[in-house]
Amino acid sequence: MARYCFISRVAPEKIEVYRERHAAVWPDMLRALRDAGWSHYSLFLSDDGLLVGHFDAESREAAQEAMSNTEVNRLWQAEMAKLFVGDGSPDEEFVYLPEVFNLEEQLAEAEGR
Image (cartoon, rainbow, N blue to C red):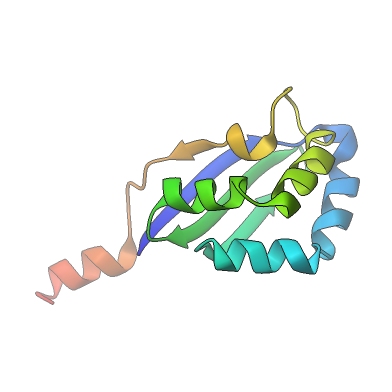
């Protein structure tokens, strides 16, 4: 399973609304993410609106495509779009970051595992 990390930007004046919405994500959205192959999904939000997300999936593309095919995601993204900087669907504007260090992988290599 691969790890993925992305960044995006929440409009600074919408940060509190974003936090409130994510304190109680719709149960159907949670199940859709799980069923689409997203696991260990976490979001981190700075006070200036920088959003950092992390998830594991067999395939980022397949996981995102599976979500894009759900009605609950279309509804959720329409609601969330009002909170982000930019004009598109938030989940289509993620900037993915390449992994440059992983402790477990390097330890395993150093220890000959």
